Length: 406
Ligand code: GDP
Image 1: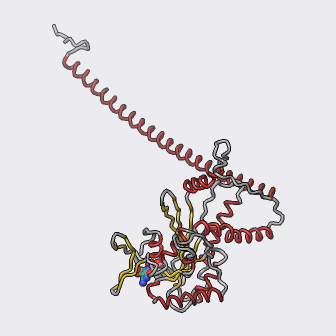
Image 2: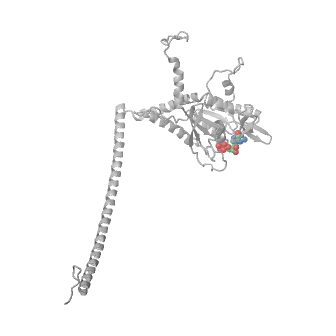
Image 3: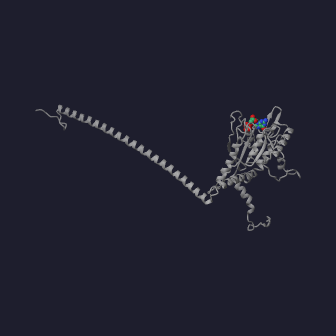
C-alpha cells in the first residue's frame, strides 16, 4: 500500500526538513541538456512528392539539396541517412534523417518496402546486440527509427495499393504518421473528402498509424475550448505544403509558394496543416515517439528475437554463453597478436634488407677508395723516381747541395 504524504512548501521550509527530491525534475532536465536527444525520422514516398522540401521546411534548414532532375532516380529502393545536430535554447537534438529514394518508382513495386523493413530491423538488431553484451556501454547509441512520415500523393481519391501494403508491412515496427503531399493542389472541399477517404481506408484495412496521446492544455482564456492538441489531431492525415522560398511579409520571415494567382504560406493553418503537424510532432510528442519505439516496437522485435533464440539455443545456459564469449575474445586477441607479429617480422626483414644493401654499398665505396689511393700512390712513386732521376742528372745530392767537380 502506498501512503500519500503531502509535503507542503510551508511544512518543509526549514533546511533540515527539506529532503530535496522536489529537485528531481531539475536533475532530469540538466541530464537531458547535457546528453541531448537522439531522434531518427524516416521519410518515405514516391519521388517528386516534396519530401526533401518538406523536411527542410520542418527544420528550418537545408537538410537536403532540392535540385530536381540532377540526381537520377534509382531503379531499386536505396536507403540514405544523414545526421545533423540542431540546437535550440541549449537543447541539442541529434536528428537523423533517413531517405528512401526509389520507393514506389518502379513499374513493378511489389515488395519494394523490403529494404526499408530490413533497415528498421537492422537498427533494432544493432541496439539489441549492444544491450545484450556482457560489458555494456553506459550510453547505448539509440539509432532506432522513431518516426516514419509516409507521403501520400494528392490524388483526391484514397489510398493506393502501395500505400496500404507499405503501412501494413511497417505498422508493427515504426510509428507511422501519414502525410498528404502538396496540399495546395486540392481545394478545401476536395481535401476534406480525400482525408475522409483515407481515414476510411485505414480503418477498412486495419492499419495502425501512430496514435497521438491525449494532452491537457486548453487554449488560454477560452473556457471549455477544445484542447489545442485535440484540434491538431482532427487534422490527421496532415496535408502539408513545403517550400524553400522565404520572403518578408511585414516584419515576419515567411516560407511561401508563389503562384500567379496567389501565395500559399507554409506556416498558415488556413492554407495547410504544416504548423499543426510540427506542433504535435516536434513540440509535443518527440519523447512519446521515443518511448513508444522503445516500449512497443523495440519490445516486439526483442520478443521475436528471444523466441527465435530460445528455439535455436535451448542448450545454451548463461555459463556456456559466457564461455563462448570468452573464447571469441581470446580468438580475436590471438588474431590481433598474430597480425602484429607478422607486421613486426616484415618490418625487421625490411630493415635487415636495407642494412645489407647499405653494407654492400659501403664495401663497394671502400674498394673504389682503395683503388684510387693505390693509383695515386703509384703516380706519386713515379713522380719521386722522376725527381731522383732529375737530381742525379743535375748533380744535386739528397741533402740539396750540388756535387762539385775539381
Ligand atoms: P522529393 O523527390 O519527394 O524529395 O521531392 P522534392 O522536395 O525534391 O520536390 C519535388 C518538386 O515538388 C520540386 O519542384 C518542389 O519545388 C515541388 N514541391 C515541393 N513541395 C511542394 C508543395 O507543397 N506543393 C507543390 N505544388 N509543389 C511542391
